[in-house]
Length: 126
Image (tube, rainbow, N blue to C red):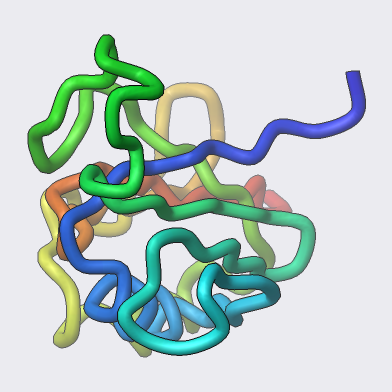
């Protein structure tokens, strides 16, 4: 195996792109090339996330639940978590403030514009 890039289903990719740009992601590919999008891939460093509309799925994958949010947490490691947290805290829905975990990571948790849960973490030097 070489990589994992989640394909997250959303209702409004344009809104999602704007939100993830605020988190520092950039669009690297989209279908079509401009709005309204059916699919887009965004990256930030080594992290890639794909977004696809529920409508674009059609009948190809009927087992995919067509609701906002999900029963998964995207765990994103980064450097400079405290600065990142300070830059975002007034712009996002924080569901768990910056804290130190029992396993030594510094983390905070947000809910994105589609109700998906993102945990940002850093293994800070002691």
